[in-house]
Structure formats: C-alpha cells, structure tokens
Image 1: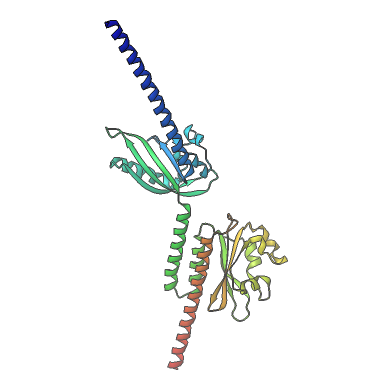
Image 2 (image 1 turned 90 degrees about the horizontal axis):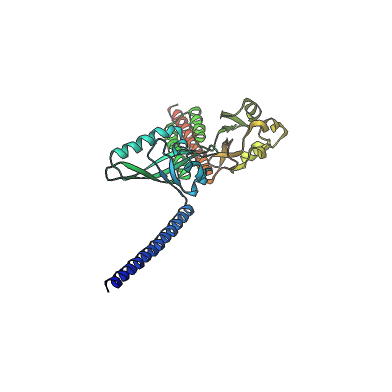
Length: 330
C-alpha cells in the first residue's frame, strides 16, 4: 500500500515537473515573440535605440536597425568596431561626456541633451538623446539606455528664425548702406545651405546692375559678373521682380558667362529687392553642396530681401525729411 502511494506521488511529481516545464517553454516562447514584436515596433518608428555599457565612448550591446538612417550598420556597433563616442561631433563630445558624468553623480534616473553626430557620409546631424541610467542596488551603473531622435530640421528652422530676428534688430538701428550690406550678406551666409553670394545694386539713373559686395566667389566670377547693363538678360531677369531658383549652370544666359561655369556652384537664388514697387537691388546666393534650396531657406532669404527693401525705404524717407528741414531753414 505504501509502495503504491509512493509510486503515485512520484508520478504526480513528474507530471507537475513536465507541466511546469511546458508552461515555462510557453512563457519563454511568448516572451521571445513579444521581444521580436517590440524590436519590430522600434524599427518602424523614427528613433534609434541604444544599449550602452558605461565605459569610455560607450560601446553598444544593442542598437536598433534605424541606425541605418545615419549610414551605419548594427554590426559596426555591436561588434565593437565602432563606439558611439566615435560618431559624436568632436566639438560636442567633451560636453556630452561631462553632462553624463554629472547626471550619474547626482543620481539621475534619466535626462535629455542635444548635440551633433557625424554620419558615415560625413554629414553633420543634430540629435536629441534621452538617456536612462540603469544602476544596481549599490548605485553602480550597469547600463545606459539611449533613445536618439534626429532633430536636424528643427534646429535648422530655429537657426533661420534667429538669423531673421537678429538681422531685423540690426537693420532697425543702422543708418549706413555699406554697413547694412555687410550685415545682410553675412546673415545670408549663416544659413547652412548658402556658401557664396553677392548683392547687386541697381543704378537709379541707368538701370544697370553693379556687384556692391560679395563673399565666397572667385576672382574670375567677380571679374566677369560684377556689372550687367540694363539691356542684358541678367538685368532683365532681375527687373521682372520675382524670385528665381535655379541651378547655377541654368542661369548662364550669355556667352560672356562661360567663364563662370567653373565656379562649382549648384542651387542658386536670385532675389529682387524692392522699395515700394521699384526694384532697387538683387541678392545672388548660391550653394556648393545642395542642388535645391528648401522652402524654409527660400522663405528666410525672401524675408531678408524684404527687410532690406524696408531699410532702403526708411533711409530714403529720412533723407527726404532732412531735405525738407534744410529747405525750411533756408
């Protein structure tokens, strides 16, 4: 009887072990499926997820497939061939390291910071990193979990707004044309996509165009494009009074322009400047890197041209007032 009871107990125990093993296998499979689904979701959203070890330059144990948006592969990081610190912009790296160390010392659980990284092709991109600090019960950091979001477009738009604002303030206090031309062109060249350009002034008497100021243009360009008479195709294009966005090569309108083909300019903007309804000047702005200027860049340079037109109108009005005062005194 006792032997039968013992055998029954053994069978029951074995049955429970098989049942537990079966349930554990189900749970493990379920967990793996959930992990796969989670990774699939991560790879579909526009963020890159990292799991870093808290070591120099942050070697990665995991990185999501979205790292390919920056030109890199997962294997480059998980193999140890590439460390995350290697792609952080050199000018930002010390700040990023210092900020992380400070947050760990102050027992932060998570924090955010913005900085630049360099893509595999050499392009500079801005990212917003949200870091989660995982420590054990003794406060020793075991892992750093990072979520990286590309915010380059947002940073560019912010920069354009600052350029526009600062120029508006500068123009409101300026009374000299030469000084104003410098500020205008320098402001345009602060735009990342713009690498070269100049400002032409329209002669009030003849209608000719003369290059008053320039940056980033070769002596050959300046020699061959410093003056256009009123009947030239270039001047007529400006006097239409509408912005023109084309490839530099498409704006070479005469045989005289052949010397300008070697300038290595790509996307180009010609922006007429008006005082009232009259065209008084024109911006000639070009990119050596972009084949097309974005809508946000176009909006800003057109706004800058409008600000210049307002400035000229103000200066002319002030000159008229001064002339009236002189006549009254006479």
